Length: 150
Image (cartoon, rainbow, N blue to C red; front, side):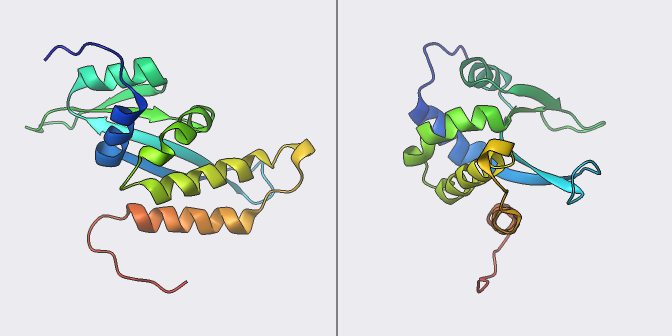
């Protein structure tokens, strides 16, 4: 398959809804007073290397190919977007998302809170970041979701 033309935000948002993951992970970090730090992240996975390369070429990000030894399945190509790229991309696709709209809203809020860690922005709201982290984990969990009262 030969792809031509630019990929617009609508097509990109469809890929995020269908093949993407909007999440945030915690990383241990002894240099911080809490002992960990948050990293917002978006990934899009597909077995079609060409489309993943096109997405990365137009929207940024870096590509990793996952192959399992002795696996008969096709390799999976993954493009990942860090916080700096997410600050540019997410506002442009928020109103185009259907399935992952809530995750997008939560990540945008987290990105705003994480900018607060800079001295000129005041204190960071760790409690709210932890709430966002837990909600994203729940929304991204595979299988049947059990309702939880908040």
